[in-house]
Image (cartoon, rainbow, N blue to C red):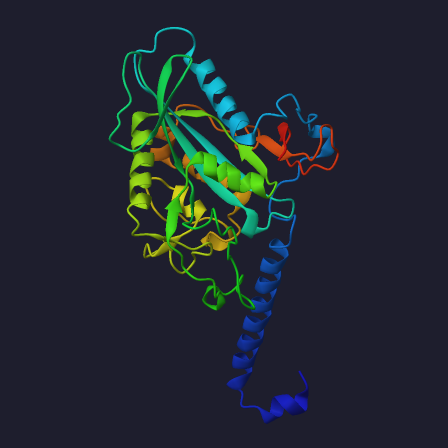
Length: 326
């Protein structure tokens, strides 16, 4: 330090100057790290080209929703087999979608929960679940897909608005919106409309208790007391408003931490659902609800937009994927 400057300051001020300088440097470094982490392409694992299988075009002319429900039905039926089903069986199918840049405005995490009924048992009509039959198996299903209630007609999601909003929650000017729990068909339609890559995990078999946890979360969302906000850092702890990630995370605890510094920040798209799966497998009570191991990276299956058959203009972040089109 300059000796003239040092001699002109009281001795007690020198540590204070150092503390202020240190705090300023740390603040700058932290902000720089956060900005770098939010740059496009930095938020999810890239799959090397040599590790990817060729995109499957065999179902290209089937609508995306049909491709997805067909895969769910086929994979669940493989678990059930041809024999008699003497008890109810329960499954979860986690999802995410995102665009090439993984912009939060175009990302979403959601989940489908399915109960396959025992033979000769009829679905209940009083609990508001989707019902159907596949290969003579009766099933009930529901979705956890939390978005602004007008998103089908106004799909312009406000995530961060205002200078510094990504870093300082209080600076975010995005409003709180009424929320709505969308069904699977409309959720997939929203992703397909903007040609997103859709990721699917599972189906994973769960216990009846796991199914009931999901039902309680659906009922909580359907009450309308909790609203929607994409950046819920200031609103999730008091249950004012939550985003799609926190709507499905921690089915036994509404607001688990995750993301950078435990804030939930950067938890969108594939990252968000992957973090939920890690949480499910890490927590003892949720490990008991899952009846099979989960490998969130290896279990991913993708559905990617291709403008034409055998097109090479495809955003494909998956090892295995099928193609869809408009």
